[in-house]
Length: 535
Image (cartoon, rainbow, N blue to C red; front, side):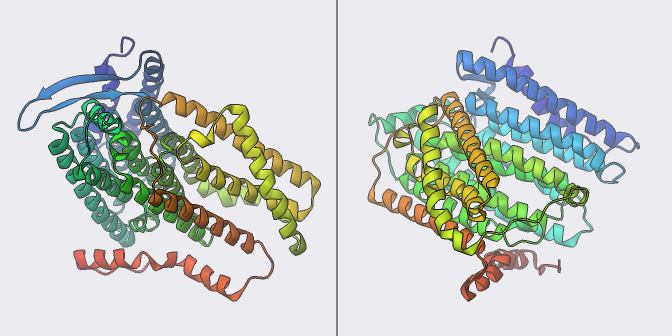
């Protein structure tokens, strides 16, 4: 890049890591200095990512090599800057900037404030190197260091026994993910003879195009990468650590939910040319992603704690993002990461003032849906929502028939907009009905434009190979569609005045997360020889 030398581009990320590893200071103003430096470096990185985005758009992806080693294995230290990298660089640095500024006030006077800024700085820096790395060795090292930095943040208050125990559970699941990633790294080197992205992607394209033959190893590589991504992004059955880590300070939760947890999705998107060589891995990702999304969305509605509700919301969103990856809609998944990160950072950083804001506002009583109007409202809302989606896609130019997973994702969007519209129709208030229809139109148009922009931006960086769906693929698509229709039916039923007994029992089980966290708790207790403390 002529505008931005590679050393200058990497400097803020490396500086953030170095800042995090500086020995603890002893002056009273050390915490403020660390906070200001973290804010400054994140802001500088954000500006550089904008410049890099302009350069990548104009000149295309570029690789930089700083140091090349030939033994014990050929590996280099460098950067791979493409559209995916600059999007994630801008996102991570912006989220880091906002959280750092917030934390300077939120943790003012806290004796652990300096330690928080040091490990936040190191974690953000490692996340930036993760998205900028040019090979799997650098990616794996940054992946593991990011997890280590997050563990230090989760154990910020050693006197909180539940927080320490939950961090230990997270630590075990993360090490399982590391094993999967290292296994995939070794197999990739043995199969392709390199760990460099450009060489791996070229070999994967040759297999996709029929110029070379795949093997069992290539399918296994994709499966291991998918399993590693599932542990990092809290996918079922590795999800239970996320709701249990809510005793951490709010800035840590914001960084974890809006930043670090996206690493799993980024892994699949970055390595999509390689992962897509394994149809089994993509089918597994679609099924597990859909199951996680449905589980998280149901449990979220039953939680009484706002932070646990946000945690299950993150699980549901990450599940939907993984579903998009499993369907091959990598551009949609990247857009989902960006939108979810911005929303979740705001949600966590503002959740503490929700009660204060509610006390100052005079909110009118919520209108209840009339029982006799629910069915007619649904008959109007579903076709209306589908019409809005179809019209918006046609106007913007999104051809869902030729997009991976387009039909399934269109169905899910239709159900989401139907949920937005149908309750207002059941109330029967004209102004409320028109308002909900207008909001639905704004949502679908905004999403369509944003998706088209992201898709064109990252077209050369993700897998776009068309594959004829197999019988298993069709079965997966059908199962996913049925699952989302079922959850939509549950949401409609929850709005009715009379609920059957089985629904009330389901509510109780959902409040307890359907008890899926019990095996992970028992495993953690066995490994550390200590039972879970009382919350």
